[in-house]
Image (cartoon, rainbow, N blue to C red; front, side):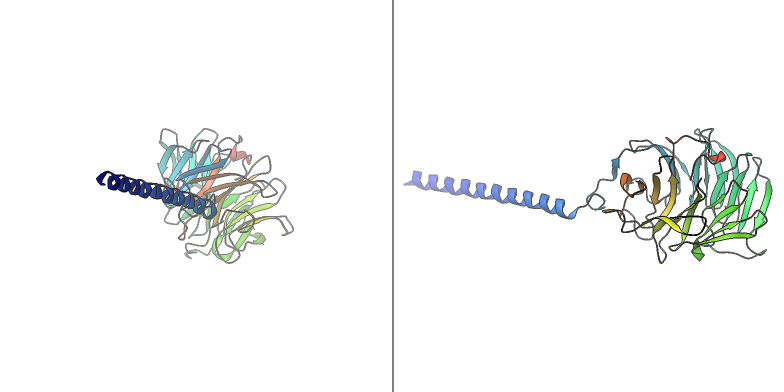
Length: 332
């Protein structure tokens, strides 16, 4: 009788264990199903800190929020970094040095982290560019000044977009470029306008840029590529021809599975693809990929995400695209 009771208890215990195993298997399968259904490739809850899709590139970039500039390998590994408060514009120069803004200044730094050019201002600065003559173009936001500064730090040219003493404020200007024709292209972020100025300050052209223009590039065909932020009508990237017609456009609903938050830096590649940086500030940390490469027909062929080491990438230049930036061979 005792033996029968022991056998029955053992069978009951084994049945209980079997039931637990079956229940756990169901829970595991259910959990996996939930992950598959609800976790898209760019959902910040489900993705790993570092994620690349497609063929990666070696690149330099700025992280505005962390105040750093980076060199990143094609595998997505950070290989070099340097402090740069409020950095928003960056170039890789033919000599291998990096040129970038630093909130209220501009620096050129070697790979050995030696500063070989420096400019400081009381005004916020969001734009810089090395010119073919060796001078550096600088756009001062608050003062509204467009400057050309020699290698020894002397201002050799100055153009004022605002009356003397007037403060344009934080939103007056973002990216700006000196063009091959000698004119200047300026993203007036707060006005939702891009203006082209002659060298004497005369307004040659205005382009409406809903969303707030952050970066501007004059393409070789004469069109203007504009990255727009998160004002009304944005975020988006538009290409506008010389007549003002939008001939190409990427908006929030054009890239399935990817949420555009605030479009900042960009580069048009020789093959026609466009590299875009998706700035993730304004309460969007970790909610989308940092960098997106798309074809002319808006097919996504590369994304880069590193929410562990980066916050808000605001400017980029690929290092595997050859060319001399000072000679307008890099469209960035």
